[in-house]
Image 1: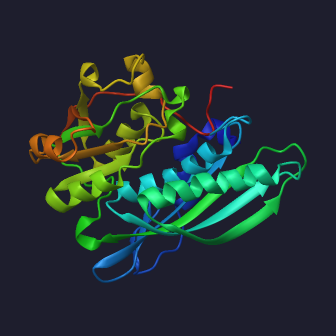
Image 2 (image 1 turned 60 degrees about the horizontal axis):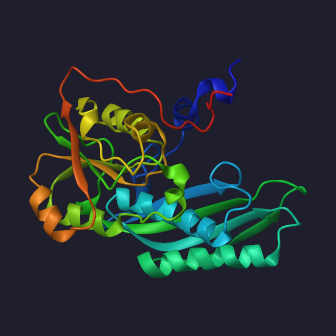
Length: 293
């Protein structure tokens, strides 16, 4: 019998979600950056996400940076669906020796992120862990999106150009704790252009691009030499490091000129195209359960 580590994250999620019940209010179910539910023109985005000490942040990291990251990860997923944040619930799982100062500073980081990008904390839960256990912060949130602006991972079309925002790689240098969720950029894109498929880059381009391509039932060609690299980063690191939290999207529209005018300080790079049949291959990126141990 296979263990979860042998199975891998994507296969585990597929197995767990195979026979889940649904309803006529579910517009987009499991498998995308967020669930999309509701009726009418304004839909709700539902998302939960967790950061764990030793996996997503180090024990001695400043708690306000951890708080920012915990919130920003969820906001980045709202952006990837074309939406904006609304209400969030916070679950803290902490061992008893964690100081009150640490918890207060964690919330200061959360609040700072929400004041800048939108959304409010409306409640949550605290629970204790055995002494010495790593801290865990879980965020459950609701966002909103106009039905006309919903973008999923599955809408990519052969001939689409593949774009990424920002620079890739080097998250270990600290940017994974201070990144900007691309809410404004994503909303501008979905308001003005036909964005066929989109997601945020959390597990590395080598892991996330094949996910988007598979859901869109396309192939792809990737120009690795065109990848926008963070300072001091190799192409391999840009493909595999993960936690970039940039937008990865596809479109057939000509967007580069208008983008440069609207967001002159945020790079936008065409890195390839979707194809009908023949596809490049990518392996690597981050898998929560298969880390080569």
